[in-house]
Image 1: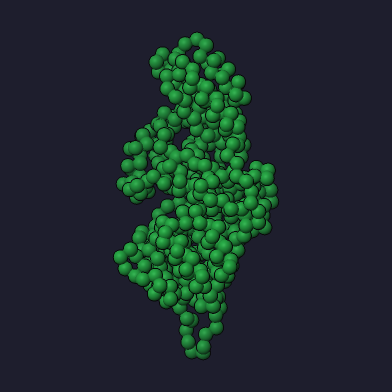
Image 2: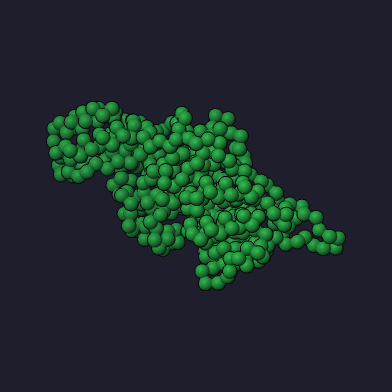
Length: 421
């Protein structure tokens, strides 16, 4: 960390504290909220750290020069998004001895190895609380609160847009497209919501959390993810009959000497701690033998909320906190893990259909936990929840089911978290 932002820096007699000059890269929704929040809270930050922060320069697409901003700053805050030129600026800033704060999940998920290495080499801080779950202090909790804890699992709802859409679909019975349009009207979804609804945004966040929790390199390309585009009102209606609620879940967990990092739509039973999380809220759970289970929840979207997390990183730097992320080992990432599933089948209503379906499932070591039948004749449907089995076994079972003449449409399936958590 550069001497200019060291906590408790001495000043000459009669002088006030030397202000901390912050170079701001990007002044969009979050950048503008951060600048406003910093001005409002500068006095409180000074009271807490002994240093008063101020914006010394701003870089936008149409104005500002990065070299000049870097030269005139003590600390850089990047809120421009994208991987380039954000990566170039991050490297230049840290090599110049400037602490670097970012809310850029894609930057870290794709180039984390390089950036963490440069931060260690240069002895500067790289802070990124706002990159995951906005205002929820999950990064700081893992890095500092549980630094000496062997974490077994980190999972939760890390995308507010999809949680809002799924909550609204369940509450109103509306379709996906209609609910997405509503989310866009309210500002919960971007004009191009692809990263959110496809699961890519959540996957980038889970890559970051897995890296921190397990001290092993994890990149976005190694995270398997599914989105919510194929979810239908029928899925949610039948889920209610089975006592389930639907979330887009990110999961990073140890499995022996390997780890699994995934994102997928998932049904939860009503007793699960994540089941009540509605709207644009996020919630993340941490499990370890030493702590049992800890859940953090709060708003997962919004310019002001994200700006608040960025300001928290700035305060931590000024206070002299120096968390160090280190890679301790390289754990293989596995994709084929056990899971329970919801299975939706549109079938011909005739004798022996259920028995034939049960036979196919049994042949692939898939056992049924519960089943509901709806309709008769051409409208007959079977909705099942199957016990935990290897995902590869379930996929082969679904492929075999799709080959049955009794199915009127391809089978649909969604992960289910069993009642025990």
